[in-house]
Amino acid sequence: MKGGTTGDGDVRELLLVVPAGLLGVLLAWALSVPDPAPTAALVRVVADVTGAAVLGLAALPRLSARVSPPWRLLAGLAGIWCAAEFAVLLFEAADVVGVPVSELGADQFGTFLTELSGGQIGIAILFGAGAVAVYAAVAHRRPDIASADLVLVFTAVALALRPITGHMSQQRFGSVLAAVHALAAAAWFGLLLAIGLVVRTRGEWARVLPRYSAVALPLIAVVGVTGIVNGFVRLERVGAVFDTGYGRILLAKTVLLAALLALGWWWRRGWVPRAADHRMTARASLRRAVLEVTVMSVAFGLAAALAVTA
Image (spheres, rainbow, N blue to C red):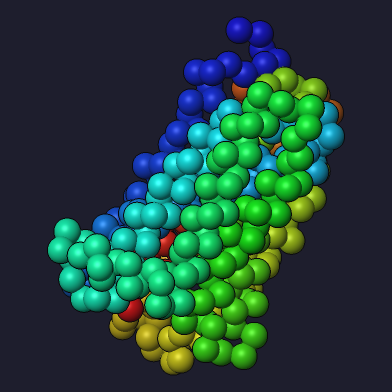
């Protein structure tokens, strides 16, 4: 393997995002005991991570016109995302009915899907994820007629649908804040993950990384501000940060975001200028990207737990 390129073995390190996301969920569970076991959050983090990855892959040409989405990989991730969203729907329906998922009846699930807004939104999300999977599979065969922007729009809409019906929807501008938070987090995480999956050479890192860095800082600022506002609206009092499970998870997520902000600042001083000047190998850049997306995945796990914590 040449020093200026990355191979499949290096890219497989990005699979650390899965156990890291699950670690975030388990950490949240430890902070919120005696809440129930975090099975719903485990499913939710898989849906959130794969949805963000699809968004990032679709948005990648916006960073560099020379980089095309890997349509087969995009189709596979969209398929996993669709399956995970279906599992999320099952857990949501079971929670509404008040029974374990294993005891949820088909008629109960059908009623949830057709008569409740959460189920109807879930169907729309499934349609969006499924449409992206099918489109990407076709695009793999006919890349000459494929449009990454179309996938980007469908994915962004699907990712924004669930937050707008959550607890924040009862507050003025709450739905907007929740949707902006979800999209900013998905773009921030998904773009860097996509770069790690697709970019192979030192020259490509030199071109793409500075452009990602330019958008990453405002994205993480939006994530931080909207997340804090959303969280404290939900908590209603400062003391709840320490004496409720939700508050402790929110505090852990805030600390982790602050650490990521510090890491991003450090990268902008060292990694980004060195990569832009072709003074860093593709492998070294990938390892830094793996570190950052792994920590981001822990934050996604905490966020998934927040979404299902009472």
